[in-house]
Image (cartoon, helix red, strand yellow):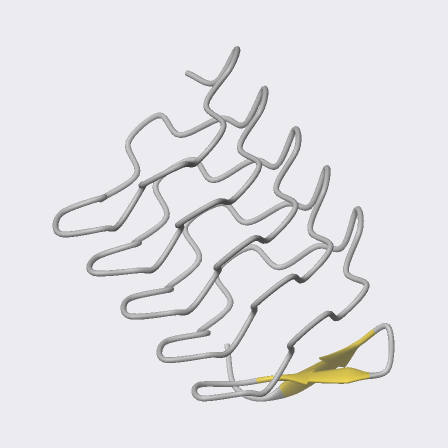
Length: 106
């Protein structure tokens, strides 16, 4: 998936999506490697098989997000809300999950 526009935001590697409202967005297979998603609103977003290595998701709202098979290698998920998120098959190698809320996540 190359650069695309979703909710007025350009989705591409290294994108600055700090505080972006991407609630419920379809970002399956999106390449957001090294993207700045600090404080982004991604609740109930479809991030299946999304490519997010080294993405900065500090404090992001991922409540109920579908991250099935997503690559989150070395991603910063510190303080992120992953309540009820689907993390099955996700690669979390080296990811920072300090202070993340994983209540009800699988």
